[in-house]
Length: 401
Image: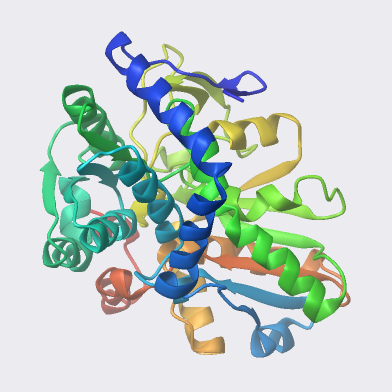
Protein backbone atom coordinates (compact mmCIF):
# COMPACT_ATOMS: atom_id res chain seq x y z
CA UNK A 1 0.00 0.00 0.00
CA UNK A 2 1.80 3.11 -1.22
CA UNK A 3 -0.82 5.57 0.07
CA UNK A 4 -2.85 6.22 3.20
CA UNK A 5 -5.95 7.89 1.79
CA UNK A 6 -4.59 10.88 -0.13
CA UNK A 7 -1.28 10.82 1.75
CA UNK A 8 2.01 9.07 1.02
CA UNK A 9 3.15 8.09 -2.47
CA UNK A 10 6.50 8.45 -4.20
CA UNK A 11 7.49 11.98 -5.21
CA UNK A 12 11.15 11.51 -6.09
CA UNK A 13 13.58 12.07 -8.96
CA UNK A 14 13.45 9.46 -11.71
CA UNK A 15 16.90 8.29 -10.63
CA UNK A 16 15.40 6.98 -7.35
CA UNK A 17 12.47 5.08 -8.86
CA UNK A 18 14.51 1.92 -9.52
CA UNK A 19 16.21 1.92 -6.07
CA UNK A 20 12.79 2.33 -4.43
CA UNK A 21 11.34 -0.51 -6.52
CA UNK A 22 14.32 -2.69 -5.59
CA UNK A 23 13.79 -1.80 -1.92
CA UNK A 24 10.05 -2.49 -1.99
CA UNK A 25 10.51 -5.87 -3.67
CA UNK A 26 13.26 -6.88 -1.24
CA UNK A 27 11.24 -5.74 1.77
CA UNK A 28 8.08 -7.60 0.76
CA UNK A 29 10.09 -10.74 0.14
CA UNK A 30 11.94 -10.41 3.46
CA UNK A 31 8.93 -9.93 5.73
CA UNK A 32 7.37 -13.09 4.29
CA UNK A 33 10.58 -15.04 4.80
CA UNK A 34 10.47 -16.85 8.14
CA UNK A 35 14.27 -17.05 8.34
CA UNK A 36 14.61 -13.25 7.96
CA UNK A 37 11.93 -12.53 10.55
CA UNK A 38 13.44 -15.05 12.98
CA UNK A 39 16.82 -13.33 12.63
CA UNK A 40 15.21 -9.92 13.22
CA UNK A 41 13.41 -11.17 16.33
CA UNK A 42 16.62 -12.78 17.57
CA UNK A 43 18.43 -9.43 17.54
CA UNK A 44 15.46 -7.64 19.12
CA UNK A 45 15.59 -10.08 22.02
CA UNK A 46 19.29 -10.83 22.42
CA UNK A 47 20.79 -7.48 21.35
CA UNK A 48 18.15 -4.82 22.01
CA UNK A 49 16.82 -6.50 25.15
CA UNK A 50 13.17 -6.81 24.23
CA UNK A 51 10.47 -7.13 25.33
CA UNK A 52 10.56 -3.65 26.85
CA UNK A 53 8.67 -3.56 30.16
CA UNK A 54 5.21 -2.05 30.57
CA UNK A 55 5.75 -0.45 33.97
CA UNK A 56 2.98 0.50 36.38
CA UNK A 57 3.80 4.05 37.52
CA UNK A 58 2.42 3.67 41.03
CA UNK A 59 3.62 6.97 42.51
CA UNK A 60 2.48 8.98 39.49
CA UNK A 61 -0.87 7.20 39.63
CA UNK A 62 -1.32 7.94 43.34
CA UNK A 63 -0.29 11.58 42.87
CA UNK A 64 -3.30 12.24 40.63
CA UNK A 65 -5.65 9.38 41.59
CA UNK A 66 -7.40 9.78 38.24
CA UNK A 67 -6.55 6.62 36.36
CA UNK A 68 -3.93 3.90 36.41
CA UNK A 69 -0.79 5.01 34.54
CA UNK A 70 1.52 2.62 32.72
CA UNK A 71 4.80 3.50 31.00
CA UNK A 72 6.11 1.61 27.97
CA UNK A 73 9.85 1.60 28.67
CA UNK A 74 11.49 2.06 25.25
CA UNK A 75 14.15 4.03 27.13
CA UNK A 76 15.53 0.70 28.36
CA UNK A 77 16.39 -0.52 24.86
CA UNK A 78 20.03 -0.81 23.83
CA UNK A 79 21.08 2.67 22.57
CA UNK A 80 18.40 4.26 24.76
CA UNK A 81 15.37 4.69 22.50
CA UNK A 82 12.87 3.05 20.18
CA UNK A 83 15.02 3.85 17.10
CA UNK A 84 17.02 0.63 17.27
CA UNK A 85 13.88 -1.47 16.53
CA UNK A 86 13.65 -0.02 13.04
CA UNK A 87 17.37 0.30 12.38
CA UNK A 88 18.05 -3.40 12.94
CA UNK A 89 15.25 -4.32 10.54
CA UNK A 90 16.56 -2.00 7.83
CA UNK A 91 20.20 -2.97 8.24
CA UNK A 92 19.33 -6.67 8.06
CA UNK A 93 17.45 -5.84 4.86
CA UNK A 94 20.47 -3.91 3.54
CA UNK A 95 22.66 -6.92 4.28
CA UNK A 96 20.18 -9.18 2.47
CA UNK A 97 20.29 -6.84 -0.55
CA UNK A 98 24.08 -6.94 -0.68
CA UNK A 99 24.61 -3.30 0.33
CA UNK A 100 27.88 -2.52 2.10
CA UNK A 101 27.30 1.09 3.17
CA UNK A 102 24.51 2.89 4.98
CA UNK A 103 23.58 6.53 5.33
CA UNK A 104 21.14 8.03 7.81
CA UNK A 105 19.76 11.36 8.99
CA UNK A 106 19.30 12.30 12.61
CA UNK A 107 17.88 15.09 14.75
CA UNK A 108 18.20 14.28 18.44
CA UNK A 109 20.91 11.81 17.53
CA UNK A 110 19.12 8.69 18.76
CA UNK A 111 18.52 7.41 15.24
CA UNK A 112 22.09 8.27 14.31
CA UNK A 113 23.42 6.36 17.31
CA UNK A 114 21.19 3.40 16.45
CA UNK A 115 22.37 3.47 12.82
CA UNK A 116 26.02 3.67 13.89
CA UNK A 117 25.41 0.81 16.33
CA UNK A 118 23.83 -1.41 13.69
CA UNK A 119 26.58 -0.62 11.22
CA UNK A 120 29.23 -1.56 13.79
CA UNK A 121 27.38 -4.78 14.59
CA UNK A 122 27.33 -5.89 10.95
CA UNK A 123 30.62 -4.33 9.80
CA UNK A 124 29.18 -1.70 7.48
CA UNK A 125 30.41 1.77 6.62
CA UNK A 126 28.11 4.45 8.11
CA UNK A 127 27.65 8.17 7.40
CA UNK A 128 25.16 10.21 9.43
CA UNK A 129 23.84 13.61 8.34
CA UNK A 130 22.96 15.94 11.22
CA UNK A 131 22.03 19.63 11.27
CA UNK A 132 24.74 21.90 12.70
CA UNK A 133 22.33 23.20 15.36
CA UNK A 134 21.56 19.65 16.46
CA UNK A 135 25.27 18.73 16.45
CA UNK A 136 25.80 21.49 18.99
CA UNK A 137 22.87 20.65 21.26
CA UNK A 138 23.36 16.87 21.06
CA UNK A 139 27.12 16.74 21.64
CA UNK A 140 26.95 13.49 23.61
CA UNK A 141 25.20 11.59 20.82
CA UNK A 142 27.63 12.98 18.24
CA UNK A 143 30.51 11.57 20.28
CA UNK A 144 28.73 8.23 20.61
CA UNK A 145 28.26 7.98 16.83
CA UNK A 146 31.94 8.74 16.21
CA UNK A 147 32.99 6.26 18.89
CA UNK A 148 30.95 3.60 17.08
CA UNK A 149 32.86 4.32 13.89
CA UNK A 150 30.39 6.50 12.00
CA UNK A 151 31.24 9.68 10.12
CA UNK A 152 29.00 12.54 11.28
CA UNK A 153 28.40 15.17 8.60
CA UNK A 154 27.32 18.56 9.95
CA UNK A 155 24.72 20.17 7.66
CA UNK A 156 24.79 23.97 7.56
CA UNK A 157 22.10 24.66 4.95
CA UNK A 158 18.66 26.04 5.75
CA UNK A 159 17.81 25.89 9.44
CA UNK A 160 20.62 23.39 10.07
CA UNK A 161 18.21 20.96 11.76
CA UNK A 162 16.52 17.63 10.96
CA UNK A 163 14.76 18.79 7.78
CA UNK A 164 18.04 19.88 6.22
CA UNK A 165 19.89 16.77 7.38
CA UNK A 166 17.23 14.67 5.65
CA UNK A 167 17.53 16.71 2.45
CA UNK A 168 21.28 16.13 2.35
CA UNK A 169 20.92 12.42 3.08
CA UNK A 170 18.46 12.05 0.19
CA UNK A 171 20.86 13.86 -2.16
CA UNK A 172 23.65 11.50 -1.10
CA UNK A 173 21.44 8.47 -1.69
CA UNK A 174 20.64 9.65 -5.23
CA UNK A 175 24.39 9.70 -5.87
CA UNK A 176 25.32 6.38 -4.22
CA UNK A 177 22.22 4.16 -4.40
CA UNK A 178 24.03 1.26 -6.10
CA UNK A 179 25.96 0.13 -3.02
CA UNK A 180 24.38 2.30 -0.29
CA UNK A 181 21.22 1.77 1.76
CA UNK A 182 19.42 4.81 3.19
CA UNK A 183 18.19 3.98 6.69
CA UNK A 184 15.33 6.44 7.27
CA UNK A 185 14.61 7.03 10.94
CA UNK A 186 10.88 7.75 10.93
CA UNK A 187 7.60 6.94 9.16
CA UNK A 188 8.36 9.56 6.51
CA UNK A 189 9.73 9.75 2.98
CA UNK A 190 8.64 7.98 -0.20
CA UNK A 191 6.93 4.60 -0.22
CA UNK A 192 7.84 2.00 1.05
CA UNK A 193 9.61 3.77 3.96
CA UNK A 194 6.52 4.89 5.97
CA UNK A 195 5.10 1.36 5.84
CA UNK A 196 8.44 -0.37 6.41
CA UNK A 197 9.42 1.76 9.41
CA UNK A 198 5.95 1.32 10.92
CA UNK A 199 6.15 -2.45 10.53
CA UNK A 200 9.55 -2.60 12.25
CA UNK A 201 8.29 -0.33 15.05
CA UNK A 202 4.95 -2.05 15.64
CA UNK A 203 6.75 -4.32 18.11
CA UNK A 204 6.08 -1.48 20.61
CA UNK A 205 2.31 -1.70 20.27
CA UNK A 206 2.22 -5.48 19.86
CA UNK A 207 4.10 -5.93 23.15
CA UNK A 208 1.99 -3.29 24.89
CA UNK A 209 -1.24 -5.00 23.89
CA UNK A 210 -0.03 -8.38 25.13
CA UNK A 211 1.35 -6.90 28.36
CA UNK A 212 -1.69 -4.82 29.32
CA UNK A 213 -3.98 -7.79 28.70
CA UNK A 214 -1.76 -9.94 30.89
CA UNK A 215 -1.53 -7.33 33.68
CA UNK A 216 -5.04 -5.86 33.60
CA UNK A 217 -7.15 -8.26 31.55
CA UNK A 218 -8.32 -5.49 29.21
CA UNK A 219 -7.07 -2.88 26.77
CA UNK A 220 -6.16 0.68 27.85
CA UNK A 221 -8.59 3.57 27.54
CA UNK A 222 -5.93 5.98 26.27
CA UNK A 223 -2.49 5.75 24.73
CA UNK A 224 -0.14 8.74 24.53
CA UNK A 225 2.99 9.21 22.43
CA UNK A 226 5.03 12.13 21.12
CA UNK A 227 5.16 12.82 17.40
CA UNK A 228 7.66 14.53 15.12
CA UNK A 229 7.95 12.36 12.02
CA UNK A 230 6.07 9.89 14.18
CA UNK A 231 7.72 6.45 14.29
CA UNK A 232 7.37 5.77 18.01
CA UNK A 233 3.74 6.89 17.94
CA UNK A 234 2.89 4.87 14.83
CA UNK A 235 4.64 1.83 16.23
CA UNK A 236 2.56 2.14 19.38
CA UNK A 237 -0.74 3.09 17.68
CA UNK A 238 -0.82 0.70 14.74
CA UNK A 239 -1.77 -2.54 16.57
CA UNK A 240 -4.62 -0.66 18.29
CA UNK A 241 -6.16 1.09 15.27
CA UNK A 242 -9.02 -1.40 14.97
CA UNK A 243 -9.66 -1.29 18.74
CA UNK A 244 -12.06 1.65 18.57
CA UNK A 245 -12.49 1.95 22.34
CA UNK A 246 -8.79 2.77 22.70
CA UNK A 247 -8.15 6.49 22.24
CA UNK A 248 -4.89 7.29 20.44
CA UNK A 249 -3.41 10.67 21.37
CA UNK A 250 -0.20 12.26 20.08
CA UNK A 251 1.72 15.26 21.42
CA UNK A 252 3.11 17.66 18.82
CA UNK A 253 5.91 20.05 19.70
CA UNK A 254 4.39 23.43 20.53
CA UNK A 255 7.80 25.04 21.05
CA UNK A 256 7.52 28.59 22.35
CA UNK A 257 3.81 28.69 21.47
CA UNK A 258 1.79 28.46 18.27
CA UNK A 259 1.22 32.23 18.19
CA UNK A 260 4.99 32.90 18.23
CA UNK A 261 5.52 30.91 15.05
CA UNK A 262 8.31 28.97 16.79
CA UNK A 263 6.79 25.50 16.91
CA UNK A 264 6.57 22.20 14.98
CA UNK A 265 2.78 21.78 14.92
CA UNK A 266 1.12 20.51 11.73
CA UNK A 267 -2.03 18.60 12.75
CA UNK A 268 -3.35 20.01 16.01
CA UNK A 269 -6.52 22.06 15.75
CA UNK A 270 -4.66 25.17 16.88
CA UNK A 271 -3.10 25.52 13.41
CA UNK A 272 -4.41 25.47 9.86
CA UNK A 273 -2.95 22.31 8.38
CA UNK A 274 -1.68 22.48 4.80
CA UNK A 275 -1.08 19.46 2.61
CA UNK A 276 1.90 19.39 0.27
CA UNK A 277 4.76 17.35 -1.11
CA UNK A 278 7.96 17.16 0.90
CA UNK A 279 10.91 14.77 0.94
CA UNK A 280 9.24 12.27 -1.35
CA UNK A 281 5.81 12.12 0.30
CA UNK A 282 2.46 13.92 0.29
CA UNK A 283 1.52 14.86 3.84
CA UNK A 284 0.52 17.62 6.26
CA UNK A 285 3.21 20.29 6.47
CA UNK A 286 4.22 23.40 8.33
CA UNK A 287 4.06 25.69 5.29
CA UNK A 288 2.87 29.09 4.18
CA UNK A 289 0.05 29.86 1.72
CA UNK A 290 2.49 29.56 -1.18
CA UNK A 291 3.63 26.09 -0.13
CA UNK A 292 7.01 27.17 1.21
CA UNK A 293 8.23 25.18 4.23
CA UNK A 294 8.28 27.19 7.46
CA UNK A 295 11.21 26.41 9.81
CA UNK A 296 10.11 24.25 12.73
CA UNK A 297 11.15 24.78 16.34
CA UNK A 298 11.26 22.56 19.40
CA UNK A 299 13.53 22.30 22.42
CA UNK A 300 13.64 18.58 21.55
CA UNK A 301 15.72 18.03 18.43
CA UNK A 302 13.83 14.85 17.56
CA UNK A 303 10.54 16.75 17.16
CA UNK A 304 12.05 19.71 15.30
CA UNK A 305 10.53 18.70 11.93
CA UNK A 306 8.11 20.67 9.69
CA UNK A 307 6.06 17.68 8.59
CA UNK A 308 4.65 14.41 9.81
CA UNK A 309 4.42 10.84 8.56
CA UNK A 310 1.66 10.39 5.95
CA UNK A 311 -0.11 7.69 7.94
CA UNK A 312 -0.45 10.12 10.85
CA UNK A 313 -1.96 12.68 8.48
CA UNK A 314 -4.41 9.97 7.41
CA UNK A 315 -5.31 8.96 10.99
CA UNK A 316 -5.97 12.62 11.74
CA UNK A 317 -8.13 13.03 8.62
CA UNK A 318 -10.36 10.08 9.59
CA UNK A 319 -10.33 11.20 13.26
CA UNK A 320 -8.87 7.92 14.49
CA UNK A 321 -6.06 9.66 16.37
CA UNK A 322 -5.99 13.04 18.11
CA UNK A 323 -3.05 15.44 17.90
CA UNK A 324 -2.48 18.09 20.58
CA UNK A 325 0.06 20.85 21.23
CA UNK A 326 2.60 20.62 24.07
CA UNK A 327 4.96 23.54 24.68
CA UNK A 328 8.67 23.46 25.52
CA UNK A 329 7.82 24.63 29.03
CA UNK A 330 5.28 21.87 29.61
CA UNK A 331 7.75 19.26 28.34
CA UNK A 332 10.49 20.50 30.68
CA UNK A 333 8.10 20.37 33.63
CA UNK A 334 7.10 16.81 32.72
CA UNK A 335 10.79 15.88 32.39
CA UNK A 336 11.29 16.94 36.00
CA UNK A 337 8.02 15.39 37.15
CA UNK A 338 8.73 11.88 35.91
CA UNK A 339 12.32 12.03 37.14
CA UNK A 340 11.20 12.80 40.67
CA UNK A 341 8.01 10.75 40.79
CA UNK A 342 9.35 7.49 39.33
CA UNK A 343 13.14 7.82 39.08
CA UNK A 344 12.90 7.70 35.28
CA UNK A 345 14.62 10.48 33.31
CA UNK A 346 12.81 10.63 29.94
CA UNK A 347 13.97 12.11 26.66
CA UNK A 348 12.59 15.61 26.05
CA UNK A 349 10.67 14.11 23.13
CA UNK A 350 8.97 11.58 25.44
CA UNK A 351 8.34 14.31 28.00
CA UNK A 352 5.87 15.87 25.54
CA UNK A 353 3.70 12.73 25.76
CA UNK A 354 3.98 12.68 29.55
CA UNK A 355 2.99 16.35 29.74
CA UNK A 356 -0.08 15.78 27.56
CA UNK A 357 -1.24 12.80 29.61
CA UNK A 358 -0.90 14.78 32.84
CA UNK A 359 -2.68 17.79 31.34
CA UNK A 360 -5.64 15.58 30.45
CA UNK A 361 -5.63 13.64 33.72
CA UNK A 362 -8.66 15.52 35.07
CA UNK A 363 -10.78 14.12 32.23
CA UNK A 364 -9.80 10.62 33.28
CA UNK A 365 -11.92 8.27 35.38
CA UNK A 366 -10.21 6.54 38.32
CA UNK A 367 -10.94 3.20 36.64
CA UNK A 368 -9.30 4.18 33.34
CA UNK A 369 -6.03 2.66 32.11
CA UNK A 370 -3.51 5.06 30.57
CA UNK A 371 -0.38 4.05 28.66
CA UNK A 372 2.39 6.54 27.89
CA UNK A 373 5.17 5.62 25.49
CA UNK A 374 8.50 6.66 27.01
CA UNK A 375 10.23 6.56 23.64
CA UNK A 376 13.74 7.32 24.90
CA UNK A 377 15.91 8.21 27.86
CA UNK A 378 16.97 11.73 28.76
CA UNK A 379 20.70 11.59 29.36
CA UNK A 380 21.23 13.20 25.94
CA UNK A 381 19.13 16.19 27.09
CA UNK A 382 20.62 16.83 30.50
CA UNK A 383 22.77 19.79 29.42
CA UNK A 384 19.69 21.51 27.94
CA UNK A 385 17.70 20.90 31.10
CA UNK A 386 20.64 22.00 33.27
CA UNK A 387 20.70 25.32 31.42
CA UNK A 388 16.96 25.66 32.02
CA UNK A 389 17.38 25.14 35.76
CA UNK A 390 20.44 27.40 35.85
CA UNK A 391 18.34 30.22 34.42
CA UNK A 392 15.74 29.70 37.12
CA UNK A 393 13.28 28.15 34.65
CA UNK A 394 13.08 31.39 32.70
CA UNK A 395 13.88 32.73 29.24
CA UNK A 396 13.22 29.64 27.13
CA UNK A 397 13.90 31.57 23.95
CA UNK A 398 17.53 32.24 24.85
CA UNK A 399 17.91 28.61 25.92
CA UNK A 400 17.04 27.50 22.39
CA UNK A 401 19.50 29.75 20.55
